[in-house]
Length: 203
Image 1 (cartoon, rainbow, N blue to C red):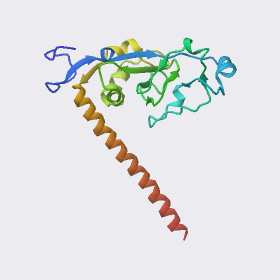
Image 2: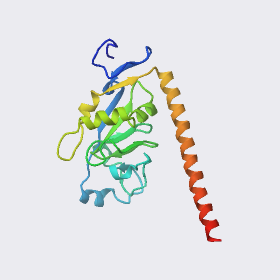
Image 3: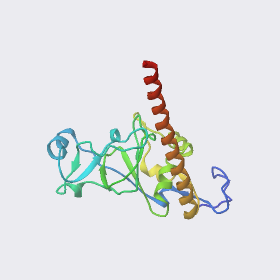
Image 4: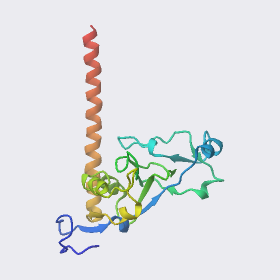
């Protein structure tokens, strides 16, 4: 936790909030790569095991395609890191760096271009929403390095997060969940109206 009187802090917070480093409230771990030959031979079309998630499996709307045909079976699982349910995956490098983000609904193994955020002293969904904020995105982009373009997990651990008390985190998540639900319902209704209009035009 940082001193609220520090003039180098990004902006002023409510008195009950605090600036903390992201690495102080989350375990932040990158995943493991699989080469094409191994993937085809050992991990494709397996019936048992944990689903293996790559960047391509995280959609722009934050949903995750778990049924991609790749699973890590029990006899290989010790060689792979596991991201637990209710943690967040973020793409660290390439064209989708800082943009592709997904909230896990099951335990998975995951690729080396992804980073897993598992909450320690914070609400896991609050971290998921924080990683989608323009504040975090701008900070991420300011720290891109290399030809491919990416940010290391060690650098991300030092990023400052404005952290409210846990009860406030839960309330913020509740409000954001409701807003997203309403937005999804609005999109559904809008698409339905478009279909109705097309049917009317054909008559």
